[in-house]
Length: 372
Ligand SMILES: *Cc1c(COP(=O)(O)O)cnc(C)c1O
Image (cartoon, rainbow, N blue to C red; front, side, top):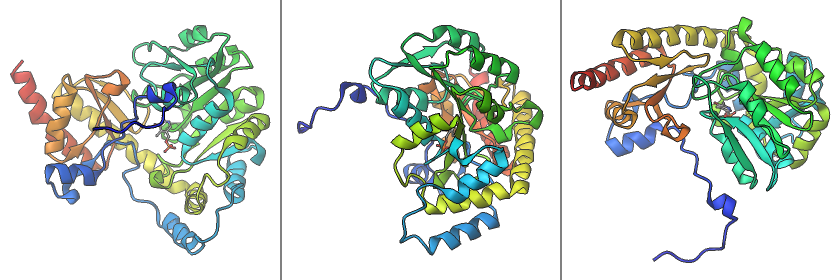
């Protein structure tokens, strides 16, 4: 018999919980597999281990963990400000860039207000919006990508935030910088545009928008980035936002005073300085993505061209194929909760991991095709 519990806010009780990629240990336990043989291509992490410079920075910071971290994040903000050509006052640090998305909704949304985002966009936009009791306006995607003109038209008087992911997860789609800037310019200045660039470093330089530069011209623009993806620090939880200093001030008012821990701050400073690690990771990703999509093409399996470190693969009965992959120790990401029940999202791994995935997939879909 379940006991009565205090009445939660009805808009909180309505939230569908986030479904993360499954941890290796979890799958190993359930299917009785050796964790060492499992390949995880489910959460868009960097498949390389952290660099030795990052590990050394973490070890040094570990000696100080009885102290609170620097709540302002002086060293990390200083390093980011220099790298990006902005002032520290334009920066907000977060416990992952997920935190920045939450902070934006805390500072700008309330019941009765609305946020606009695209269909098939990152799951945290509706989650953070609904957690404030605000209304989510989901705009139909166009060929799985953001339809920016339609998103502009969806903005109402109640709209206080528009979320744009570029590239988007889980689709891997990308908006041209010129179209993106025209969109931002068209948005009323009392609506905050949150431009989520979690995969920015994976873009070829020619594809990158001058989004940080835009924050000087567009006071209603907040750009968010993360150390979880190309920088390889997903477990430490650290990200940042770049925006007008007055907007940053608002986000800083609602953030926890010590939201970024000391190990994360030290690691992020070291990771930012390790330019070769990022370059090599982008190159490894470029090769791995080519390996995956040419493998898929030769199996005759459709996929969505990707600008990130993952690829959305159209497999048909994704739940069944996902399970068959799990039985072979390959963890990928079902995306039915994103309205994509026929797809699986596969993170680009190391070359041997990509091969494992393709080798595991081939007989399953082969059977599928054979059985019609
Ligand atoms: C992974 C991801 C993030 C944030 O990840 P954090 O680990 O919280 O920094 C944000 N947006 C998108 C689109 C992502 O895929």
